[in-house]
Length: 363
Ligand code: F6R
Ligand code: MG
Image (cartoon, rainbow, N blue to C red; front, side, top):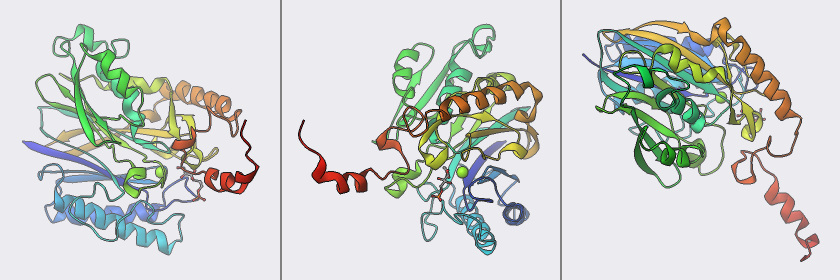
C-alpha cells in the first residue's frame, strides 16, 4: 500500500513571545485535521508543536506536493492564525507570507517534508522537528545516521546497509541539486554539506532508490527576499531493516552540535534534544531545540507517538547543551557566537555605516 507522509509546519504565533505555542491554536488545528480525516482526504494525523512552531503530521494517499493536502494545511494555518490574533499572540501569522493559497505551500512560508513509499510489513518512522534554527540543521545528523560507522554500526555489520546510501543535496542559493553516493564520495559530499546554510541535505535514498529520509529545505530568507526568521526545519526518517535502527537514527543528537539561529536568528548555539513538553526555548530565546516523535505506520494509521528525547538517556546531552550555551553566551555580541554579518536576521549595519560615513578616512 502506497502511503504519503507529509509534515507541514508554520509559526502562526508565539506564547509568550517566541517561546511556545498556545493550546487553543493546537486545538483549532486538531479540529481542522479531524474534519479532513472525516472527509477521507487524510488517513490519519497528529498535531504537535516544537516551541512556537505548529506541526501537522499527516498520512494520505495523494502523493507529494498534492494541492488538496497543501491547501488544507494552509487553511488550517490561516484558521489557527485567527485564534492567535484573537489571543493577541506574538507574531500571529508570521510564517504565512502569501495573501492567498496558490497551488503549493512551498514558497509561501510554511516548511514541508514529504515522502511517498510502499508501507513495509512494519514501518517505523521518526519525525524530527526543530525550533530556533535553520534548514541546514539536519546536515550533520543525517551524515552521521547514513554515512558514519562511528554512529551507525549497521553500515559495517548489517548486510542490507553495507552498500551505503545516496544523499540529495540542494544549493538553495542557485536552486540546483546534486546526488552523492556514499561511502565512495563522502569527501566530496562533506565539501558541500559542511556549509549547511547553503547546501542542506534534502533527502537520502538507499542504493536501490528507496526513500530513507526527507527534510524541509525551504529558506524563509530567500522566499521573502530578506531575512524574516529562522526556518525551524523538520525531517522524516524511516527506520529498521534496510534503514538505520531507531537508536542509530537518534544517536547523533546525544552530542549537541552548534546550529544557526537562537536569539534574533543571529547566533550560533547548541541544539538541545528535548521531549515535546520541554520544547520551550527560553534562555536568550533558546537554546535551539529538537524533538523526535516516533510512529509505527499501520495502513497509514499513525500509531504513536513515542516522545523519544523525553528519555533519561538524553539528560547528559541536555546538560552538555547547557554547558555549550554558557560557553557561547560569554562571547556576547562577538563572533563566533553572533553570526557573520551576511547571515544575521537582524542588523543595524547599513544605518550605522551610513550615519558614520563621513568619519571613515582612508587608511
Ligand atoms: C528567533 C526568534 C526570537 C526573536 C526575538 C525578537 O528566531 O524568533 O529570538 O527574533 O524574540 O523578536 P521581535 O523582533 O519580534 O521582537
Ligand atoms: Mg519557531
